[in-house]
Structure formats: C-alpha cells, structure tokens
Image 1 (cartoon, rainbow, N blue to C red):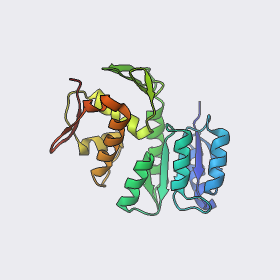
Image 2: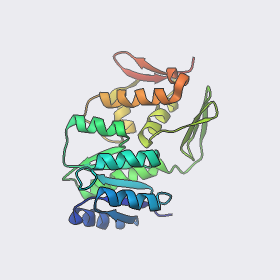
Image 3: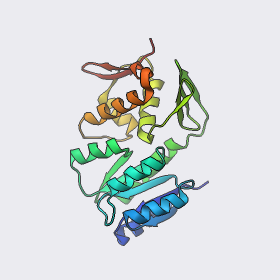
Length: 225
C-alpha cells in the first residue's frame, strides 16, 4: 500500500517541488498552506497519514505549535521539520517536542526523498518481532512498547532509540554511534540531543528506566540486572 504524506508549507512553489519528487516514488500527497489548515487536514485524515513534512515558519500557526498539537493527538506519526534556521537550540527544542528529523532549506530533493524513504521503511517493518526484557515488551510489528502490560507512548525517535539500545543489550554504545544509527545520518549537533531523548525514555519507562545505564565517558547501555 502506498504511503500518504502530508506536506505543510506556506510556499506553493516549495510544496509543488516536494510533491513532484515524492510522486515519482508513488507516494500520495496531501497539502496544507498554513498551520491551521495542517491541523484540520490531519484531524480529518490522521488514520491515513503515514508521515508529515512540516515547515517551521508559517502564518497563523508556526510549525512548533502545529507539532505540539499533533503530538497531543498522535505520538507515533513521524514528523520531519523543514527549516531555514539551523540554530542548535532550535533543533534541541524541536527534539523535545518530538521532531524525528530535520532538513534545512535549501535542500536537495533527492536527499529529502531518501530521508522520507528511510523513515517510512523503519516505521513499517516487514517482519513481526516481539521482545520482552524484564517486563518491557517491544512489538516491532505494531511499533508499541508496554511496561508490565501497560502501554507506553513513545515518539518515533524515542521508540527507535529504545529499540536500538535493547537490540544491543549489555553493549556500551557511544553517543556518536547512537546518533549515526538511530538518526540514520551524520548529525553534527550537540550530544545533548541524545541525553534529552534518553531522559524522556527513562521517565516513560518508570522504574524500568534504570535499565538504561549511563556509561561515563562513552554513552549508554541497556542492561537488566
């Protein structure tokens, strides 16, 4: 089944550029020209939308406000932010809100398509895989996480981070390796990106969060003791 992508940008030229390239890969495209329209379209089609490309600077409601409300409605759908701003603090703020990926303008349409394909592929695994680690159950097919039978709401990136740590149980992973693997490309920002996500995942896991251990001078490790 073809994936449905919601493209949100106040520039018609930009929406057309993105739409033309994504359609070559048989993606179905929905559009919104401002923040308010984006929320309306998403609310009407949320069961069909597989990914959102969201501009930051827009009239009526900016991308941050839109993202915040989308996360309140759906914490799983992948969101890629399109931004002309490349400030580190902006990116960290976005990750706190649940951004899965950043693409800075101007960008290569081919790179954009590659990023979209990578995220959708990881968001829709082909094989069902169920993992249970001391009460933490990861359903790779449904992309759900439960702790002692209770569902835990994780964003796309938080889920990928937890899964990567669990898949490498008892192995100390450096921050650089986590960034390059989980974010799927070389990220040149501050390591606080990782620390921020780890903090949120630990909090959501409750008492089980202790299994994510900090390895001083290296990074993190998932270990059940």
